[in-house]
Length: 498
Image (tube, rainbow, N blue to C red; front, top):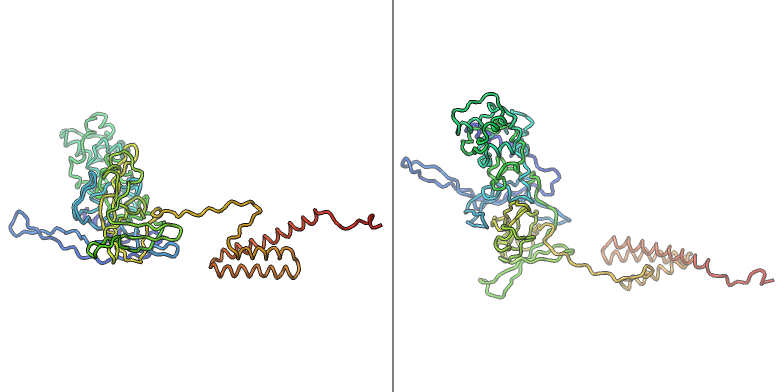
């Protein structure tokens, strides 16, 4: 079985390296920032003197691979979600606790976060072992020849939380399988009833005859001795079908820690606003005590926002549930650029730049989704210098209110500037004269639009105003023609002349 596990690891590694990226992505080839090598720590065993083994030390300087996002002529560095996986995240740089979630320095994100924590963001609970394997280049359609069926069940640690009853509740098709074809079930039953004999009965028949067998836990066996193929159909069941799935760590699901985030049921969002970073001092104290603020300036449709180290804000949509009240319903001020999966928060601000970090939340479903504020962190993300751009998503900025236009009647004209009044006069002249004078006035109208374009720098304004003036000319001429027809003639009739 250990040989099969090594074979599985080799296949997964090869499939991951060959896994295709998402077509049409909005960022460029990823760039891996330089990281220092992790130096293994040599420990001496408590057995034979001089015998040693090596334990890898977490690489605290690890950073996510970055790419470039392009939006409306601006660019910003963001994680390259095509290649980012849970294993690509830096480890926790220090010990911490957030509610009932605790971690130590060097812990990996996949060992701390659970499937339940990503409800409403990545929706990992909708995945199956087969869909994960297919994303890794191992389609289950190959049948028993697919490497997915060779995966050891000790890699699927979520199964240790199951009983026989909860297992068949998740995979009802197992009830129709003869027990003699389910070696794991046979060994489980024999662990509590050594003398039992199996003939041709199905698992359903066995549980009807011995209901207590349903309470036997899979953790009573060493799951390393079994493979995914020993439980037919388990690979196609959504993770949310298993009991206690919300508490299962990401690392308890095979291949999930190395799966690309871009292939999750809900991938990180990449729509929104790119802002320019600037740094200003907050106080006039000496350089040693001076504090700084980060100002993020978007395009003109939004107002700038300011971040200060340690500034808190209320958790959005916080209710009366337990997790939303962690830290009294407060969290550090920041932004959700990639959706609700994590929050980006300034960790340190100096005149040279700002270090931003990621904070995650914990969620459970109990009637309605109960999520805490973002406090599981910090995990370093990126350092930005003044003048560089930062992607902040769709909802990081308040919208600047637009001035309301004064109410006018349909026949009123509202000249915005004296120049517009002049062109209105030109329109009137062009309308009253159909001959050379009207033609000259029309030329002045077009020339005025060109000058307006050059002055305002807005080609749309040119076409709008020119069209408006031409239409006004036609309407004015038509209205004048109707008025002339409706007015009584002042010339004497033939009878009066005679």
